[in-house]
Length: 76
Image (cartoon, rainbow, N blue to C red; front, side, top):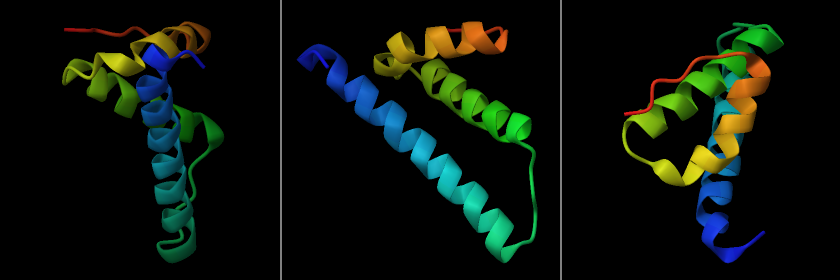
């Protein structure tokens, strides 16, 4: 991974891990189960929110993900 892209990549990985951890906690403690599609939608929505908040480092990794999912993004 080229050095200029590392911060965005690291943030992207940590954000996905954090959201998967939250899903795990929902399933374990609250007995709430979401489908894979719902989890992917939650991850995508959170990443788009980060982009809208101005964190542009993850944009390089998000654009292919959003294109594959067929989602529209409204970057500010």
